[in-house]
Length: 248
Figure 1 (cartoon, rainbow, N blue to C red):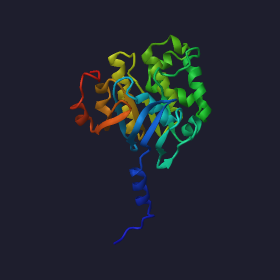
Figure 2 (figure 1 turned 180 degrees about the vertical axis):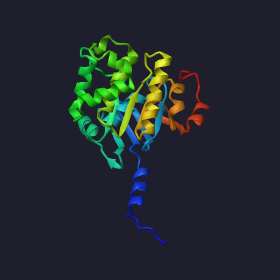
Figure 3 (figure 1 turned 90 degrees about the vertical axis):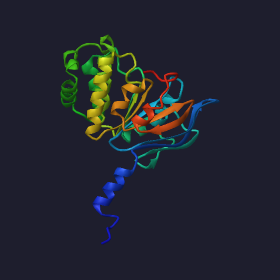
Figure 4 (figure 1 turned 135 degrees about the horizontal axis):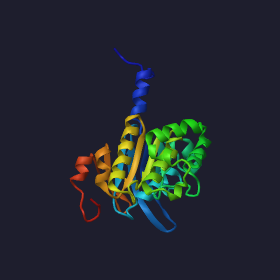
């Protein structure tokens, strides 16, 4: 018996197959300097893709392209199957892309509560946002009236993540989440990310230190000199890593 292509089950299955974020042959750079040379990358719904490689390999540039902060010179950027080349960062954010940049991106001269209040511009109630943030990271509740810039790096990263999640993103971009953090805090942060993905969030994480993110990744891509040189399962990629260009 044939199945109608317009049936709800078929539509849901098709939506599940459609990547939430996709780069196809993407080229981009800074002035005359070409930084990305035909990058292909796919993030499926409810998955974690680890973008690995050394500093200067093109990871952060890729993230800027995904958020609309850097225009493409070629190729396509797609969100949920839609070509979004040329859209501004604000427009892309409205489509569900949220990023925590390298360096965390909190407002250091505002308190924890004030940082969270800024995120209510998306329509989220502050009390609800605080309740979720403090339940997920109890230390933020204790620091609610403390200036964000006076907190530890790990606490700032928790705040940045809480602010990002207030937008209820379709895909979350994390750039060097582990930078400057103690190993125990890094483990805690990635455990939190894994819980969020289990709840349906999609994540693209750029990370120099591959082995801190591989345990929660579904797919890993190795980037060198502005190109994706290898893609596979975490086990496959971990078996090919070289300590010459990736940290342990």
